[in-house]
Amino acid sequence: MGLSGSSKTSTARSMANQWTYSDRAGTGNALSSETMSEPMIRLEHVSKTFPGTAEPAVGDLSLDIHEGEIVVLVGPSGCGKTTTLKMINRVIEPTSGTISIGGRDAATVAPHKLRLEIGYVIQQIGLFPHKTIGQNIATVPRLLGWDAGRIAERVDELIDLVGLGQEMGDRYPSELSGGQQQRVGVARALAADPPVLLMDEPFGAVDPIVRARLQEELLRLQARVQKTIVFVTHDIDEAIQLGDRVALLNVGGVLEQYGPPDELLREPASEFVAQFLGSDRGIKRLSLIPISSVELARGPVVAPGSTVLEARRVMEVYATDWVAVGEGRRIDGWVAADDLDGREGIDDGPLRVFRTRIDAGGTLKQALDAVITTRTQVAAVFDGDSYLGMITADQINREIRR
Ligand SMILES: Nc1ncnc2c1ncn2[C@@H]1O[C@H](COP(=O)(O)OP(=O)(O)O)[C@@H](O)[C@H]1O
Ligand SMILES: [Mg+2]
Image 1 (tube, protein in one colour):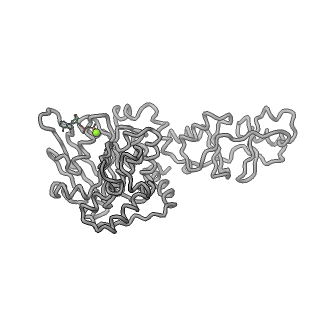
Image 2 (tube, rainbow, N blue to C red):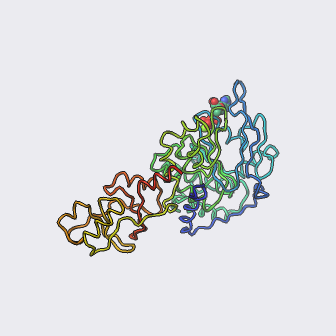
Image 3 (cartoon, rainbow, N blue to C red):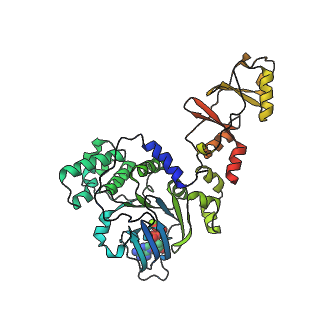
């Protein structure tokens, strides 16, 4: 069924192919995985007990994060997500255990060096208010001593990459919306092309519509830049949408389950995981299944000019009380069984239109919505004007049970 995170990024990847930008600001970073088999980030028995506290914020956490994947740390407030993230770039020093990045023990790399090589995005954004957007984005390249021409070029690239207009470069942070500021935060973190990006609830402060857009943009961006991203959130829906793998943490940094989102939804490892995922686990799973992964039925369709008798036979075969009219990839509309009383040919009266058209690029969650809300009780799937087939409640039910 192709439910792994890679199916999600391949969707984003195909969208990203339409972009013209090419991200090639190689900076010769010291941090790159030496071998494919070695994880980009490895936490081994990491713990953190803050001074003056009895219980560890993170008890004994081991976690492997591979190059190029988005791993989402998710869990209730206070479970140690931020602490874990900050131990990776040594903003917080672990009490015990080892963290290696690109095969090197992070404890042996000077913190200021480490932080130049790891992008960091936080909710409060932390843009410098008295610097322009361009100057904000240029922060790390400047610290690295790039020449002015190269910095200017990179800033232009990044402004494009995160979907801001070039005219934003000379503005100040207060002159941008929250969503725009968040994009600048991402651009700044990517400036020196670090292999690793740490993101701590980066979209927590923006409204749900902007948040959804930023999430989609992040997946598109990731398809281009292929960073190793550790993303922290307390929002399980965000974790499911963004994560190639999701690490679900309990209080004390206890790792309850670690795997692709579909695996958590299909087989929660504990009652805690099941509770955290919520009672609509099955429906959440549907949002991970692309329509392209299920076989579409042609459905009850008759050609224009068919007789009512033929139409009734087709309805019988498909056990429906309606029939669509069309030919090949063209669908003209549909007729209810009741409409046919008194007609001889299917064309002897008006057709109804499929009001809910599901796009071929959508998910089974959207298909389910159509099945529930439409009179025909199917999701009619289109690629533009071209009819591809339909999805029924039975099919969705089968996918949920897989
Ligand atoms: N500097 C600190 N000093 C003492 N306790 C802290 C400090 N930072 C975090 N904590 C505690 O550690 C636990 C984990 O915090 P945090 O990692 O921020 O959780 P999360 O990001 O998952 O909400 C919490 O109980 C928090 O109160
Ligand atoms: Mg936090």
